[in-house]
Length: 410
Image (cartoon, rainbow, N blue to C red):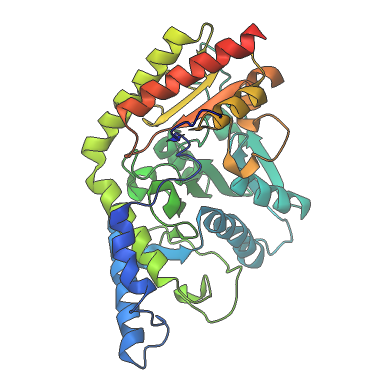
């Protein structure tokens, strides 16, 4: 009889466990309090509308925004498409009266939720610049970060949008978004920031970041799947985007469709809990992440880090890498064989983004770092969460070391 292994989940960049406290907040809106927030002619509808607006305020507080700047969506992918395609449509309708389609700047290591809509714009005639990142083995700079000089050189008079990940979902690198925003705004463009990986792992303040548009997804911070938000700045540099979905005019006409009241309540509660727990969870996840790295380094000869060093900080003392992220490459093994072996032993890890896991190609993020195909394929991504335990870290490291030894022996 095959050995039964206890499942250890270390793929929290792909999705996170729903926090029981979030489920508790959602349950009434899934059962007895099921009114449509758009049906304000009766008590059940008005009760739902009140819950939505309370959640809007709670989520806005979590990212230092105004409640009027929050648009509820079906997740970060929808939020990002709405930001990029909506901004492009607005530019085409209002600003590109001369018929010139304009220019967009993004980064080669962005999530496909950014890269794919940008590629769509490119096919429609928009000029696109994809900035490179500092290579892994370059001693001058932070691996995975863009060089600000490259951004400054890329900005043009017709640049209307720049889109940048705050924290990368594969190698955890944190971009200097506040400085990026200064350059973008000086060029007269607007800045979209993909914040999907950030909440619960670092403070998120849209004013400090200088974001004009920002995308979020509840299931990345222990909220429900299928629920997200788009921040659309209305204070100071007010930004407008054209809708992509038309229907009932919900969310001020920016995103039509019946509001998911349980999901909205869950999103807000998850964000509130994430911010409330930052002071305790950030150092705890960092200790566990560093413990995992120490165990791998001791048990897997030749293992190396992809992305910034774990202890790297910026000039303000802020980490240059998400505290829950570890991405390593293991020479001398076939990555897919290792993943299959670890999966069979109950260890849930990945080699890259869940959204591109069905592609046979190696991670575009790791290739952009300058790694070869074999190095990229022989890499593992670990994402920790508030539910990860010390015992799980130790057991995961043991299983990986054992698996690598067996594969190398073959």
